[in-house]
Image 1 (cartoon, rainbow, N blue to C red):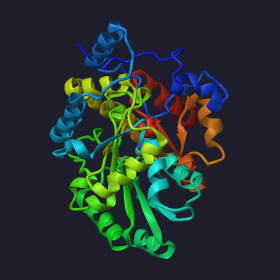
Image 2 (tube, helix red, strand yellow):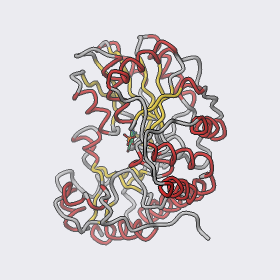
Image 3 (cartoon, rainbow, N blue to C red):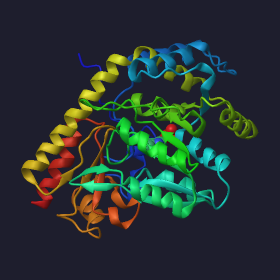
Image 4 (tube, helix red, strand yellow):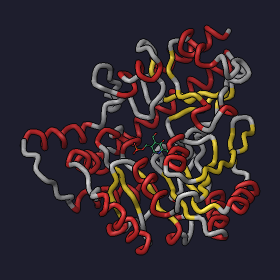
Length: 386
Ligand SMILES: Cc1ncc(COP(=O)(O)O)c(C=O)c1O
């Protein structure tokens, strides 16, 4: 029997389905946006939470060593990355973490660089904190994206950039950066004293021969980097608000501790710890099957577009469960929302959210749902465009 079960999440106060009305003005759309899954979490998570709920006392929680061990073992087994317990810190979300780091690693007005198109809260964290946003566009070669290192370095030098927020693997273009690419980026950053936030929330979601290299394992960059990750994307636990911050360097850790100590946000709720520990300890079989399900959905979507609408460009899905799809041959940027929402009754993240008008002819499709939903979405696009 299948370990990965699709569930109808409507009417559960779920942002992806129940938030459609707020975001798109109607609730009868097929929700293919928001990066979480329509899959029930692994059974081990449900039973760990059930046991805790059944005992019925929800007083202050002490984070057990077993939570740290579960994460440390997961990193070692999945990524060959040896994390020390004392490097690990808590944050309720990866987004909170990079907002905070922008605040304590830079000064107001400082320049912070991102490679666009990119997960839009990166840009918000820079603008909301009164820092200067610098963008370096990834190079799009028939849907496969790469980094223009010359442009990256030029922008750093010209703008006196202090911080780089890296997305690895990259949301939304689906790249799993190679060791060489990461090393080149970090060497440029080192040369110009640029600190790196490495957002690796999607790092377990990689397919085929693609191998995620944790940024901290690329070389000796400990003194210029913080890694952010979480079990939330991997195991569908976003609402449990438990993210893992890895800071090997003592001085940077002290900065983190002072900042979060002043916020009084140094640990999370019991439900998040219990869910994370169970998932990292016993969720592996579910995780493998979930990845196959997502990749099958990707294959169906890509192959159908190749056959039916050959000028749709689907970026190769090396990592994440989010497909980046170039519809510019068929739809102008002005037509996109009306076509997707009114004609097809579909909700996507639109390309321009990830870095402005130049990405307006793209959509980001969430593939972590049932095959039936992916087929419906793809067929509606095909039928309405043909
Ligand atoms: C790159 C990236 N970082 C962070 C997040 C969200 O992190 P959190 O829910 O832990 O704040 C997402 C969610 O889509 C993401 O894609």
